[in-house]
Length: 335
Image 1 (cartoon, rainbow, N blue to C red):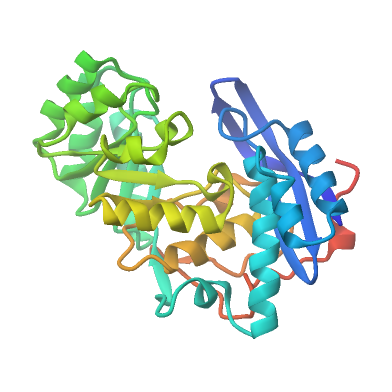
Image 2: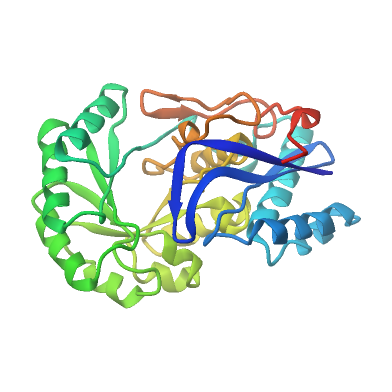
């Protein structure tokens, strides 16, 4: 069975297709397992295509046919594959992460995200994050001039001891990106995420080799993983966009084999998918800080969160399966 839901955002989400003020998706349940499909424009299939795929999966006689029905719909496949993994782990009496890896960690580090703001507001928000225990802080850049963003990074670098990341969300031209990378070399920046448009792999490759590494995010939806790995030092893996936790884990292993570091994040998902991403991150040895501290982006959720952030880390739920207890009868079927 599957049921539709709608969750309001705590604050609007800006995308290339406009502003989103709610996250709409589906909970898929089969054989005791529960998965989530929460499509996002520019990352996955549209909501209606996701629903059609889940309808076909729900009618399928077995897991293989259910997964095949979602092959062209990554968010739908995420839900079905997660339900399968959840059911299998519950049957074994083990947590999802212990079904994914032989020796997973008990908790994963996560980064705080600081949005665009003045120098003073940026520094204050970063200081507050460090005081809450975050050791890695990601700043949104690209909405202002390179000079202004450089001063924002300088302020955070001077006032905290956090590891810094910058996320440009494809905002820069090659010339602007080179200028930014040169300026950011004065600070200890772990990486700049998606400095150029998603299609420009050659431009990203040209930025590598300096003091600051390159992370690719949006480019992973535009190119084959193998091609993206040739242009990146880090890849930001979103299980919902990749079609499931299983495929994201395969991508993480492929990245490591290529000498590229994987980072796990979400597409502002609800608690089922978000918790599953925590299990995924815990299955990746020595995973860098991940973008999983996103529960506060939602004003409401589907169930209690079993994977809360504490001192900049998330402890992995130990209950069988993904550990989210959800009452399907309470899911908003009239969304």
